[in-house]
Length: 72
Image 1 (cartoon, rainbow, N blue to C red):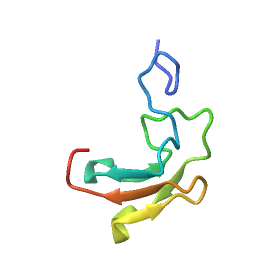
Image 2: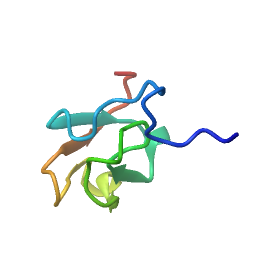
Image 3: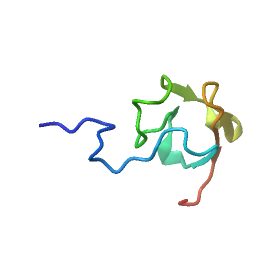
Image 4: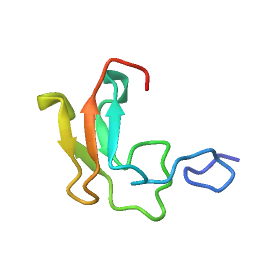
């Protein structure tokens, strides 16, 4: 049986739980909510062009993303 994303038995973080997220080049293309977040109570997926300026803001939830080289 294939595991479904967002099930309660997975170790996922709540979507939109923070207001600022650090993303790395390996996270691109960037979408909000990000993979690894619960999706059932979030907004539609939107892709954000964070690589253009190093920062991006989600138009749905207001979460801010910034590029980093560090493993945070």
